[in-house]
Image 1 (cartoon, each protein chain N blue to C red):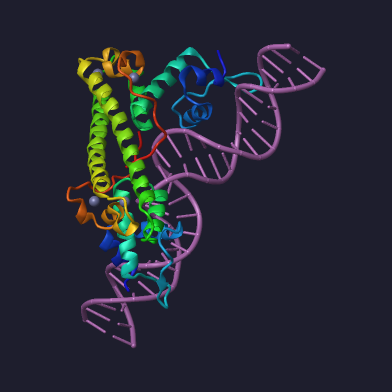
Image 2: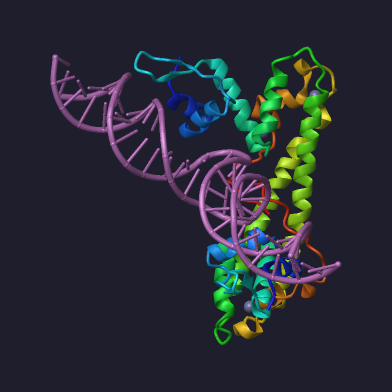
Length: 146
Length: 146
DNA sequence: CTTGAAGCTCTAGTCGCTAGAGGAATTAGG
DNA sequence: CCTAATTCCTCTAGCGACTAGAGCTTCAAG
Ligand SMILES: [Zn+2]
Ligand SMILES: [Zn+2]
Ligand SMILES: [Zn+2]
Ligand SMILES: [Zn+2]
């Protein structure tokens, strides 16, 4: 049984983040000392390490919640878990495709700018007229990170 | 002079977003009708189209604010504008590199799963132990979209 | 002149944290 | 045993870039 700071160090998850995970029900409410401080077990450490790894791979917390509840039923088929991972892979691939288009558009802007005055700047010019992009970079997909 | 709905349609920016841009000072406060409704000019339309295009390319609003203020001084050197675009390109490239690592890790998980029970699921297993990843996908960079 | 669409303001919610205030508890050293 | 440093506690607010909704007013067409 160890306090939150040691759990944080062991997993690389910051202390306020651990409390946040507890608040949203991703981690169970731990035992407390007489003085009201949280005390964790090895089991919670492993659960948090799982969460951290899944976050590093870009899974949203909701997906992680599902994965955790699946992993509590080891006898069942893993089809649902695999499906969550496949969906995440699809998200990552879509994001990459979009970023590749952005990269190309930015690169072209920079390649064509002669670095003179603003009046002649290709960057400013292209931003003012998507027609000059020639290739298409889709519209901004509503925002997700990782 | 046209109302906000027509501006929204012309630029593809949603009405509440236009009001939000005004609120944060990215768009000027427009004239109003006697009944207090916003009336826009062609100039604002062009400014908003610029913003929209830059957003589509992933520029954060703060960068767009700088680009707009630069474009108001056409005689100056465009070095600053080019630098903003270069930084954005670097951001995009970094994000792509990270996503490529994620994609590979996810793909490997899925490739190695025999799709049996949860107890044997490679997805669940790997998420519980980053050692099984072999290759490295760094820690999650604090979140930005696009 | 009536109706329905489009406009207005304001508040709160999204995601996944992060930062800070203002205090209580624990731990190590003397 | 006492003090000082560190860690812990709760609570609220903020980030970016919007989105959604309530409850109202104004405009344009028929
Ligand atoms: Zn330039
Ligand atoms: Zn474009
Ligand atoms: Zn599986
Ligand atoms: Zn890993």
